Image (tube, rainbow, N blue to C red):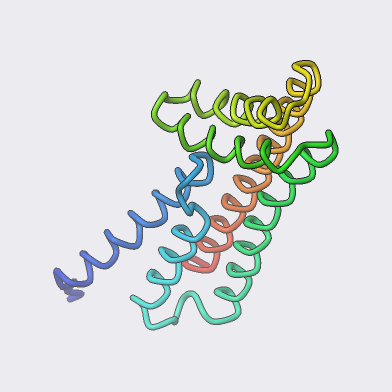
Length: 165
């Protein structure tokens, strides 16, 4: 008869919690979503002594996590740079995203845009240019988020496939 210890169950609850928080964190700025997801997957592999999820799969998951982080960073920076954003606009976008966390989904969507616009205005750019930079920064953030979500879902698929097949 198979017995499961309380520690085993607690570790799986922690692993699944990390994975769930990681998936949520891929769309909420300020949470290290992909890293939490990878940590949960690594813990899940460790719980079973790496018999179902081995080092090859963990390496692939690590590469996917790194690609997700890189895509997120590059998309937002390239979107802003393409529009000629100042450093203040980039900083404003990050600050706007963090402040937007406190205002729910609408804050998450509008915070980076507003922060980039305020940053451009602080850099003494005209309102029209500031709005253009804000929009480009926002589009870059959305593209990065979509890429990050797609790679996180791919990671989950790789993990589940490796675990059950």
